[in-house]
Image 1 (cartoon, rainbow, N blue to C red):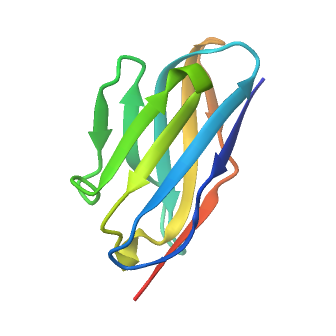
Image 2: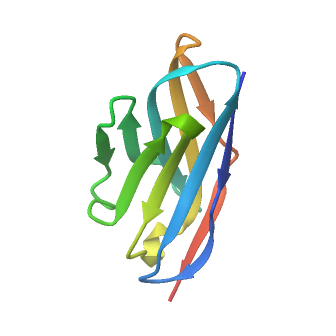
Image 3: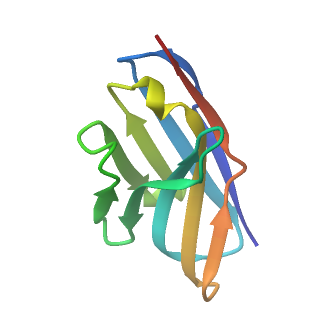
Length: 118
């Protein structure tokens, strides 16, 4: 089994920055994609950013140019650097891992709160 542990959330004023981290541990795994999702109160969970094992990143339009996803493979960690934060970025952020080893594996972190205030 693979466990994901997120850290780095909290409260920040609009225009500020936060960096989320998600560390994977447990069974041996080979990932294909690591991603960040978020869910605001009363809304569906939405995809924020993805990064492939080859380092190709993609972003939701709402965060392009403000958020950066990256990995540190030696530490099995994915990061989400969030700059120029807006009120609408307030949500619970979830880390997601998809693997080929184990086959067709998908794992979620417990979620971490990000609150942006004016």
